[in-house]
Image (cartoon, rainbow, N blue to C red; front, side, top):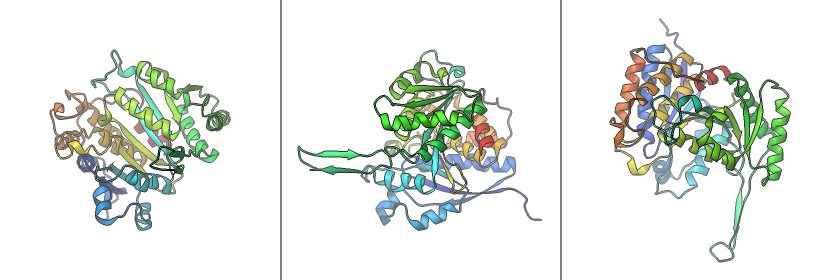
Length: 376
Protein backbone atom coordinates (compact mmCIF):
# COMPACT_ATOMS: atom_id res chain seq x y z
CA UNK A 1 0.00 0.00 0.00
CA UNK A 2 1.35 3.44 -0.93
CA UNK A 3 2.16 5.76 1.93
CA UNK A 4 -0.22 8.68 2.47
CA UNK A 5 2.19 10.60 4.69
CA UNK A 6 2.84 14.17 3.61
CA UNK A 7 6.38 14.58 2.27
CA UNK A 8 8.52 17.66 2.88
CA UNK A 9 11.74 18.12 0.91
CA UNK A 10 14.36 19.69 3.17
CA UNK A 11 17.86 20.78 2.22
CA UNK A 12 20.40 20.45 5.03
CA UNK A 13 23.42 22.74 5.12
CA UNK A 14 25.51 21.79 8.14
CA UNK A 15 28.20 24.38 7.47
CA UNK A 16 31.14 25.02 9.76
CA UNK A 17 32.22 24.91 13.40
CA UNK A 18 29.35 23.91 15.67
CA UNK A 19 26.93 23.95 12.74
CA UNK A 20 27.10 20.19 12.10
CA UNK A 21 26.66 19.45 15.81
CA UNK A 22 23.49 21.50 16.28
CA UNK A 23 22.08 20.30 12.96
CA UNK A 24 22.64 16.65 13.93
CA UNK A 25 20.76 17.25 17.20
CA UNK A 26 17.95 18.95 15.29
CA UNK A 27 17.68 16.10 12.80
CA UNK A 28 17.33 13.60 15.63
CA UNK A 29 14.40 15.65 16.94
CA UNK A 30 12.99 15.92 13.42
CA UNK A 31 13.12 12.13 13.04
CA UNK A 32 11.19 11.74 16.29
CA UNK A 33 8.57 14.24 15.11
CA UNK A 34 8.17 12.32 11.84
CA UNK A 35 7.58 9.10 13.73
CA UNK A 36 5.06 10.66 16.10
CA UNK A 37 3.12 12.90 13.71
CA UNK A 38 3.06 10.91 10.51
CA UNK A 39 4.77 13.15 7.98
CA UNK A 40 8.00 12.38 6.13
CA UNK A 41 11.06 14.56 5.53
CA UNK A 42 13.21 13.84 2.50
CA UNK A 43 16.64 15.27 3.31
CA UNK A 44 19.14 16.50 0.74
CA UNK A 45 22.62 17.13 2.11
CA UNK A 46 24.34 20.20 0.68
CA UNK A 47 28.09 20.69 0.92
CA UNK A 48 28.78 24.38 1.57
CA UNK A 49 30.79 26.57 3.88
CA UNK A 50 34.42 27.29 4.64
CA UNK A 51 35.79 23.80 4.06
CA UNK A 52 33.94 23.45 0.78
CA UNK A 53 35.08 26.90 -0.36
CA UNK A 54 38.72 26.25 0.51
CA UNK A 55 38.62 22.93 -1.37
CA UNK A 56 36.70 24.05 -4.45
CA UNK A 57 36.58 27.85 -4.55
CA UNK A 58 32.78 27.59 -4.83
CA UNK A 59 30.32 29.80 -3.01
CA UNK A 60 26.82 30.34 -4.41
CA UNK A 61 26.54 28.79 -7.87
CA UNK A 62 23.71 28.62 -10.44
CA UNK A 63 23.64 24.83 -10.09
CA UNK A 64 23.26 25.06 -6.31
CA UNK A 65 20.54 27.66 -6.68
CA UNK A 66 18.59 25.38 -9.03
CA UNK A 67 19.03 22.43 -6.68
CA UNK A 68 17.82 24.37 -3.63
CA UNK A 69 14.89 25.95 -5.45
CA UNK A 70 13.32 22.51 -5.68
CA UNK A 71 13.29 22.14 -1.90
CA UNK A 72 10.43 23.08 0.42
CA UNK A 73 12.75 24.58 3.05
CA UNK A 74 16.38 24.77 4.14
CA UNK A 75 17.85 23.87 7.54
CA UNK A 76 21.07 25.81 8.09
CA UNK A 77 23.74 25.17 10.72
CA UNK A 78 26.28 27.99 10.73
CA UNK A 79 28.97 29.31 8.42
CA UNK A 80 32.37 30.84 9.06
CA UNK A 81 35.97 29.90 9.83
CA UNK A 82 39.13 31.88 10.62
CA UNK A 83 40.75 30.36 7.53
CA UNK A 84 38.36 32.36 5.32
CA UNK A 85 38.51 36.15 5.38
CA UNK A 86 35.45 37.92 6.87
CA UNK A 87 32.80 38.81 4.31
CA UNK A 88 33.55 36.10 1.74
CA UNK A 89 31.10 33.49 3.02
CA UNK A 90 28.66 36.02 4.41
CA UNK A 91 28.30 38.04 1.21
CA UNK A 92 29.16 35.29 -1.26
CA UNK A 93 26.80 32.67 0.12
CA UNK A 94 24.41 33.75 2.88
CA UNK A 95 23.36 37.09 1.40
CA UNK A 96 23.19 35.54 -2.07
CA UNK A 97 20.84 32.85 -0.77
CA UNK A 98 18.57 35.43 0.86
CA UNK A 99 18.52 37.53 -2.30
CA UNK A 100 18.14 34.64 -4.78
CA UNK A 101 15.17 33.19 -2.92
CA UNK A 102 13.75 36.55 -1.81
CA UNK A 103 13.79 35.58 1.85
CA UNK A 104 12.36 38.98 2.64
CA UNK A 105 11.66 38.57 6.36
CA UNK A 106 14.03 37.49 9.08
CA UNK A 107 11.70 36.52 11.91
CA UNK A 108 13.20 36.29 15.39
CA UNK A 109 11.14 35.65 18.51
CA UNK A 110 12.52 37.16 21.72
CA UNK A 111 10.85 35.04 24.35
CA UNK A 112 12.04 34.36 27.89
CA UNK A 113 11.05 30.77 28.60
CA UNK A 114 10.08 29.62 32.11
CA UNK A 115 13.05 28.49 34.19
CA UNK A 116 15.67 30.11 31.94
CA UNK A 117 18.22 32.39 33.58
CA UNK A 118 18.39 35.89 32.14
CA UNK A 119 21.00 38.56 32.95
CA UNK A 120 18.18 41.06 33.49
CA UNK A 121 17.36 41.16 37.21
CA UNK A 122 13.71 40.61 38.01
CA UNK A 123 12.64 39.86 34.44
CA UNK A 124 9.84 37.30 34.15
CA UNK A 125 8.55 35.38 31.10
CA UNK A 126 5.29 37.33 31.22
CA UNK A 127 7.22 40.53 30.50
CA UNK A 128 9.36 39.24 27.63
CA UNK A 129 7.38 37.80 24.72
CA UNK A 130 7.89 39.67 21.45
CA UNK A 131 8.83 39.11 17.83
CA UNK A 132 11.26 41.14 15.74
CA UNK A 133 10.56 41.35 12.00
CA UNK A 134 13.79 42.30 10.23
CA UNK A 135 13.97 43.29 6.58
CA UNK A 136 16.31 40.71 5.09
CA UNK A 137 17.28 41.58 1.51
CA UNK A 138 18.13 45.29 1.45
CA UNK A 139 19.67 47.98 3.65
CA UNK A 140 23.37 48.27 4.37
CA UNK A 141 24.03 44.60 3.72
CA UNK A 142 23.27 44.66 0.00
CA UNK A 143 24.57 48.11 -0.95
CA UNK A 144 27.90 48.19 -2.72
CA UNK A 145 30.90 50.10 -1.48
CA UNK A 146 34.25 51.42 -2.63
CA UNK A 147 37.52 52.64 -1.15
CA UNK A 148 39.68 55.35 -2.63
CA UNK A 149 43.36 55.67 -1.70
CA UNK A 150 43.25 52.33 0.11
CA UNK A 151 46.17 51.61 2.41
CA UNK A 152 47.13 55.26 2.76
CA UNK A 153 46.38 57.94 5.38
CA UNK A 154 44.00 59.45 2.80
CA UNK A 155 41.78 56.36 2.44
CA UNK A 156 38.09 57.11 1.90
CA UNK A 157 35.48 54.34 2.25
CA UNK A 158 31.93 54.66 0.93
CA UNK A 159 29.27 52.08 1.83
CA UNK A 160 25.77 52.32 0.37
CA UNK A 161 22.43 51.40 1.89
CA UNK A 162 19.51 50.41 -0.34
CA UNK A 163 15.86 50.80 0.66
CA UNK A 164 13.01 50.27 -1.81
CA UNK A 165 9.32 50.87 -1.29
CA UNK A 166 8.60 47.33 -2.49
CA UNK A 167 11.10 45.73 -0.13
CA UNK A 168 9.96 47.77 2.86
CA UNK A 169 6.25 47.38 2.21
CA UNK A 170 6.23 43.59 1.99
CA UNK A 171 8.00 43.36 5.34
CA UNK A 172 5.78 45.99 6.97
CA UNK A 173 2.68 44.22 5.64
CA UNK A 174 3.84 40.93 7.18
CA UNK A 175 4.57 42.68 10.49
CA UNK A 176 1.07 44.18 10.58
CA UNK A 177 -0.50 40.80 9.88
CA UNK A 178 1.53 39.33 12.71
CA UNK A 179 0.62 42.15 15.11
CA UNK A 180 -3.05 41.81 14.19
CA UNK A 181 -2.94 38.11 14.94
CA UNK A 182 -1.15 38.61 18.25
CA UNK A 183 -3.44 41.47 19.26
CA UNK A 184 -0.56 43.81 20.01
CA UNK A 185 1.23 46.97 18.96
CA UNK A 186 3.44 47.26 15.91
CA UNK A 187 6.59 49.28 16.67
CA UNK A 188 8.74 50.74 13.93
CA UNK A 189 12.41 50.86 14.95
CA UNK A 190 14.66 53.17 12.93
CA UNK A 191 16.82 56.29 13.27
CA UNK A 192 14.73 58.66 11.19
CA UNK A 193 16.04 61.81 12.87
CA UNK A 194 19.49 61.13 11.37
CA UNK A 195 18.93 58.70 8.48
CA UNK A 196 16.29 61.03 7.14
CA UNK A 197 15.66 59.71 3.62
CA UNK A 198 15.48 56.05 4.60
CA UNK A 199 13.50 57.00 7.71
CA UNK A 200 10.90 58.86 5.65
CA UNK A 201 10.46 55.83 3.39
CA UNK A 202 10.01 53.46 6.32
CA UNK A 203 7.66 55.75 8.27
CA UNK A 204 5.51 56.65 5.27
CA UNK A 205 5.19 52.96 4.39
CA UNK A 206 4.08 52.11 7.93
CA UNK A 207 1.59 54.99 7.84
CA UNK A 208 0.13 53.84 4.50
CA UNK A 209 -0.11 50.16 5.41
CA UNK A 210 -1.60 50.93 8.84
CA UNK A 211 -4.80 52.10 7.11
CA UNK A 212 -5.46 48.47 6.17
CA UNK A 213 -5.02 47.36 9.80
CA UNK A 214 -7.10 49.82 11.83
CA UNK A 215 -7.12 47.64 14.97
CA UNK A 216 -3.33 47.54 15.27
CA UNK A 217 -1.80 50.34 17.40
CA UNK A 218 1.40 51.79 15.93
CA UNK A 219 4.45 53.07 17.81
CA UNK A 220 7.90 54.38 16.87
CA UNK A 221 11.21 54.02 18.74
CA UNK A 222 14.70 55.14 17.71
CA UNK A 223 17.08 52.19 17.55
CA UNK A 224 19.31 53.55 20.32
CA UNK A 225 16.27 53.98 22.58
CA UNK A 226 15.14 50.45 21.77
CA UNK A 227 18.53 49.17 22.93
CA UNK A 228 17.67 50.71 26.30
CA UNK A 229 14.03 49.64 26.48
CA UNK A 230 14.48 46.05 25.26
CA UNK A 231 16.47 44.90 28.32
CA UNK A 232 14.64 47.11 30.85
CA UNK A 233 11.00 47.06 29.71
CA UNK A 234 10.59 44.38 27.00
CA UNK A 235 6.88 44.22 27.81
CA UNK A 236 6.57 47.49 25.88
CA UNK A 237 6.95 45.54 22.62
CA UNK A 238 4.90 42.91 20.82
CA UNK A 239 5.94 43.12 17.15
CA UNK A 240 8.93 45.23 16.13
CA UNK A 241 9.66 45.91 12.45
CA UNK A 242 13.02 47.28 11.43
CA UNK A 243 15.65 47.46 8.72
CA UNK A 244 18.35 44.90 8.02
CA UNK A 245 21.27 46.37 9.98
CA UNK A 246 19.27 47.53 12.99
CA UNK A 247 17.51 44.17 13.10
CA UNK A 248 20.77 42.25 13.08
CA UNK A 249 21.97 44.21 16.11
CA UNK A 250 18.85 44.34 18.27
CA UNK A 251 18.03 40.66 17.81
CA UNK A 252 21.39 39.69 19.30
CA UNK A 253 20.55 41.96 22.22
CA UNK A 254 17.21 40.20 22.43
CA UNK A 255 18.97 36.83 22.48
CA UNK A 256 21.06 37.96 25.46
CA UNK A 257 17.90 39.06 27.27
CA UNK A 258 16.23 35.67 26.69
CA UNK A 259 19.19 33.66 27.95
CA UNK A 260 21.87 33.57 25.26
CA UNK A 261 22.56 32.96 21.59
CA UNK A 262 22.19 29.21 22.01
CA UNK A 263 18.46 29.43 22.76
CA UNK A 264 17.48 31.91 20.03
CA UNK A 265 15.84 30.77 16.79
CA UNK A 266 15.08 32.43 13.48
CA UNK A 267 13.32 32.02 10.15
CA UNK A 268 14.26 33.61 6.82
CA UNK A 269 10.93 33.68 5.06
CA UNK A 270 10.07 33.77 1.39
CA UNK A 271 6.61 35.36 1.42
CA UNK A 272 5.29 34.53 -2.05
CA UNK A 273 6.22 30.88 -2.58
CA UNK A 274 8.79 31.67 -5.26
CA UNK A 275 11.60 29.97 -3.33
CA UNK A 276 12.33 28.04 -0.15
CA UNK A 277 12.56 29.64 3.27
CA UNK A 278 15.61 29.01 5.46
CA UNK A 279 15.69 28.25 9.20
CA UNK A 280 18.70 28.69 11.49
CA UNK A 281 19.74 29.39 15.06
CA UNK A 282 21.11 32.92 15.28
CA UNK A 283 24.51 31.97 16.71
CA UNK A 284 27.64 31.77 14.59
CA UNK A 285 29.94 28.86 13.87
CA UNK A 286 31.92 29.27 17.15
CA UNK A 287 35.00 27.38 15.89
CA UNK A 288 36.66 27.71 19.31
CA UNK A 289 34.23 25.20 20.84
CA UNK A 290 33.58 23.01 17.81
CA UNK A 291 33.77 19.29 18.57
CA UNK A 292 33.58 19.68 22.33
CA UNK A 293 29.85 19.10 22.69
CA UNK A 294 29.43 22.47 24.37
CA UNK A 295 27.08 24.03 21.83
CA UNK A 296 23.48 24.46 22.93
CA UNK A 297 21.28 23.03 20.15
CA UNK A 298 18.03 24.49 21.51
CA UNK A 299 18.09 27.43 19.09
CA UNK A 300 18.58 25.07 16.16
CA UNK A 301 15.84 22.73 17.42
CA UNK A 302 13.40 25.63 17.84
CA UNK A 303 14.32 26.83 14.34
CA UNK A 304 13.44 23.35 13.07
CA UNK A 305 10.12 23.65 14.88
CA UNK A 306 9.56 26.99 13.10
CA UNK A 307 10.29 25.19 9.83
CA UNK A 308 7.67 22.56 10.63
CA UNK A 309 5.10 25.23 11.45
CA UNK A 310 5.88 27.02 8.17
CA UNK A 311 5.35 23.73 6.31
CA UNK A 312 1.95 23.21 7.92
CA UNK A 313 2.97 20.71 10.60
CA UNK A 314 1.64 22.86 13.44
CA UNK A 315 1.05 20.08 15.95
CA UNK A 316 4.56 18.71 15.47
CA UNK A 317 6.05 22.20 15.76
CA UNK A 318 4.30 22.85 19.06
CA UNK A 319 5.35 19.46 20.42
CA UNK A 320 9.00 20.07 19.51
CA UNK A 321 8.86 23.54 21.03
CA UNK A 322 7.32 22.25 24.27
CA UNK A 323 9.86 19.42 24.59
CA UNK A 324 12.82 21.71 23.91
CA UNK A 325 11.63 24.33 26.39
CA UNK A 326 10.97 21.64 29.02
CA UNK A 327 14.55 20.38 28.74
CA UNK A 328 15.94 23.92 28.59
CA UNK A 329 14.32 24.82 31.91
CA UNK A 330 16.20 21.98 33.62
CA UNK A 331 19.67 23.03 32.48
CA UNK A 332 21.90 24.68 35.08
CA UNK A 333 23.38 26.86 32.30
CA UNK A 334 22.43 27.69 28.72
CA UNK A 335 25.88 27.22 27.17
CA UNK A 336 29.18 25.40 27.58
CA UNK A 337 30.08 22.51 29.86
CA UNK A 338 27.92 24.04 32.57
CA UNK A 339 24.82 22.75 30.74
CA UNK A 340 25.55 19.31 32.19
CA UNK A 341 24.61 17.57 28.92
CA UNK A 342 26.43 17.56 25.61
CA UNK A 343 24.98 18.83 22.35
CA UNK A 344 24.16 15.31 21.21
CA UNK A 345 22.67 14.32 24.59
CA UNK A 346 20.37 17.33 24.52
CA UNK A 347 19.17 16.35 21.07
CA UNK A 348 18.43 12.83 22.27
CA UNK A 349 16.58 14.05 25.37
CA UNK A 350 14.34 16.33 23.32
CA UNK A 351 13.74 13.66 20.69
CA UNK A 352 12.78 11.16 23.37
CA UNK A 353 10.16 13.52 24.79
CA UNK A 354 8.71 14.16 21.35
CA UNK A 355 8.58 10.51 20.34
CA UNK A 356 7.14 9.31 23.64
CA UNK A 357 4.36 11.90 23.39
CA UNK A 358 5.19 12.81 26.98
CA UNK A 359 2.89 15.21 28.75
CA UNK A 360 5.06 18.29 28.98
CA UNK A 361 3.56 21.72 29.65
CA UNK A 362 2.61 23.82 26.65
CA UNK A 363 4.75 26.92 26.23
CA UNK A 364 2.88 29.82 27.86
CA UNK A 365 2.12 33.10 26.12
CA UNK A 366 2.25 33.65 22.38
CA UNK A 367 3.54 30.88 20.16
CA UNK A 368 5.45 31.86 17.05
CA UNK A 369 4.70 28.31 15.88
CA UNK A 370 1.00 29.14 15.77
CA UNK A 371 1.80 32.45 14.08
CA UNK A 372 3.83 30.78 11.32
CA UNK A 373 1.20 28.10 10.76
CA UNK A 374 -1.53 30.74 10.45
CA UNK A 375 0.40 33.16 8.22
CA UNK A 376 2.04 30.64 5.88
